[in-house]
Image (cartoon, rainbow, N blue to C red; front, side):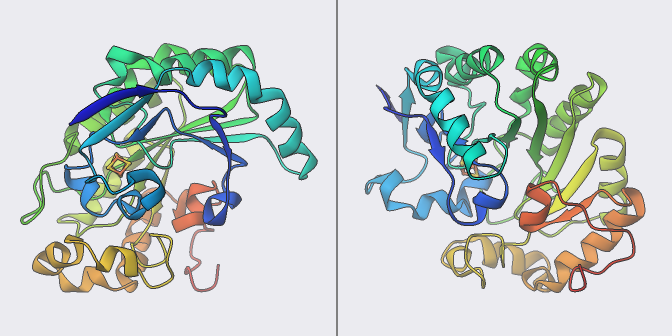
Length: 293
Ligand code: SF4
């Protein structure tokens, strides 16, 4: 794992593609991800982004953007004005191509610096997207931000299985992430569990029943339609489909998403989102199948 420090001209990236319907901007405190060799890194779509990797193996490099907070402060007024001129709100997705709460964060504090800068000049909406239970470490900052920003934490939990044969271990255990969700929700922080990408679930009823205790909503996101291609072709190039098929071949089909969504609806009625709609905070009405939504 090679860690280097770097600077960035404008940390506020205007979103394109599917993310455009979720927020006006994304922010990456790091380039690369030290979780890249863990389970989530196998199907991670960023590993296919040659602009980010520049030929380096995914999970083996991390560039620390040490001026990220200063860059936010220098650019925020112009970017907020641009977002509002587009007729929308100034929303930030933190992060779409790295993990904001990597172990290295607690040495370098890049995400923390950004959150402090946002307290000074807040966006309208802030979505914290994470695979790590360490997201709870900044809970006191979220409480302050919630006074100024519409904030929610998206915590990814792809399956109820602590181990998936054929795949490396999770970077954060399922249990640690569920406990993090519980702690945040208890502190009054809105939590959305993102089951993304959806992997075979051993006990769906128990899994989604627990979400109803620890989260405000759930997003179910299959790699088909969820990996930035309509047919999941990016993920089909990785080791993920083989591991899914070994556990439950039906989980390779898009209908599996619908079956799991129906179970989730029993425990979180009106608080289930499907793929990009869910990431954008659009929930499906109870009793409506995704094809009709
Ligand atoms: S934490 Fe996110 S960015 Fe990092 S490897 Fe996992 S899915 Fe990719």
